[in-house]
Length: 61
Image 1 (cartoon, one colour):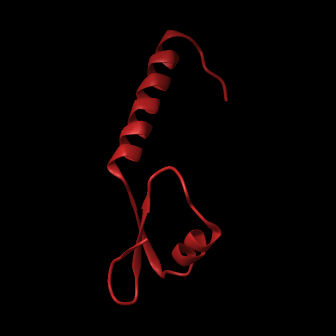
Image 2 (cartoon, rainbow, N blue to C red; image 1 turned 135 degrees about the horizontal axis):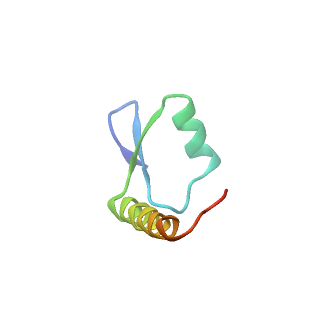
């Protein structure tokens, strides 16, 4: 986690390495959250792929 202020940290979600301590810090408002650009790009690519599949045939679940 990178320092955000003297009392709070910023947790950068990258798709790996999330710990129970990270989740606890966010839950107790001791850390903010942001998503790294590569992780956002992977989510966008997965969504586009899913939308292409769904456009061709029914998808359940």
